[in-house]
Length: 475
Image 1 (cartoon, one colour):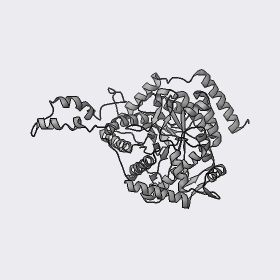
Image 2 (cartoon, helix red, strand yellow; image 1 turned 45 degrees about the vertical axis):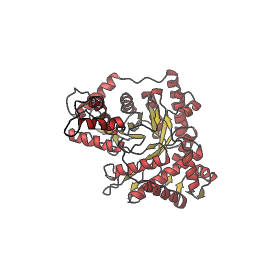
Image 3 (spheres, helix red, strand yellow; image 1 turned 135 degrees about the vertical axis):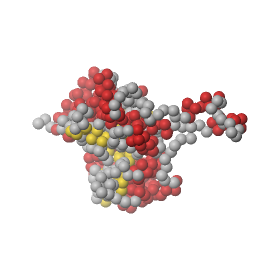
Image 4 (spheres, helix red, strand yellow; image 1 turned 60 degrees about the vertical axis):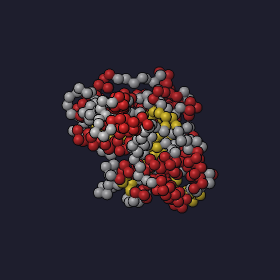
């Protein structure tokens, strides 16, 4: 027995699938890369200008080719993640914020390389976090190089799997070379990919040239790709939840086709951040009651295809200030966990992921540990049904003194309180935010992740220098 949030019936899953196939066959997707259009045409798609119509047979073949299992490898092998995940998703920070809330002053400012390093170190320390998104952009780096330097800083300061962004084919090539310096060459990297990449189609149903070219290159290198649909109900998708899921699913299926045409058997992660729009502002609305339901539906679609998923992040984005707000965050996270996605990146973000906060990472990690209470499995067998015991105790009796109770209560009954700490110092004083800041200071003062080998470090430095010349030019 385990808690599982479902939104779609089996018949509704089938209808979303069939609707998505019709969208791909009759409406098509806009593909702005000539190379990707040619690749799809060679595999049976119909190309008319920028519009590519994909037959159902090509979609079904791509789904069959896509791996049902994968390992997101890490610089340190004990941090490898085998997918499908277990009872709770693998967690990471949020990613790619253009601002940071200064740790000491709280002032919102442009992030630096040092900020990203601190986030990487704290995330490496926390057992709650299983992998790492570069949560902020190294702002002092030239924009064309930011994704590459973000990967380098993350790899240097975090032993876990790194999932980063990649928006051009040229950056993809340099990211592969950079990670290969640690992995021991490109063939070793293909066997043990220590990073994966996020790519975002432009909603609705559009694949940009540079991003899709990058996705193809990475797929051919064996790097897991995560094409993230970000359709918004009522703006870039129909106002109906059914229509939103159909468009989001069509974008994911188109991405599966692109990836598997590029490299049959290439690892791909079904990735959705489909949400309702805030009808007052037009912004993404993580607080909408429909959001966790859309996430649950997307998780069901991924399970239907047997493709690993990243579909149910939480984005609390608020620091709890008392036990009631803390409990609310715990319940929100538990509901998201019950979607049973494989990956969930969201810890540490603020203000629709426009900014990030070190203390928020700690508070979100504390919330996650409490939320795991709702994800435990419970056995249903002759022993746990306890019919003989129920008969023995009988009407009007009690079970407290029975051996069966002694054997089972610690596993079956959660005895922790909301005031108990998993991540925070249990004896620290002050508000939750003050205690979180104290934990950050402790980590940064006392913890250093195992370094990259000196030879690999020097090679990475050379690669970054060569990349700068290639991307920015000698001038």
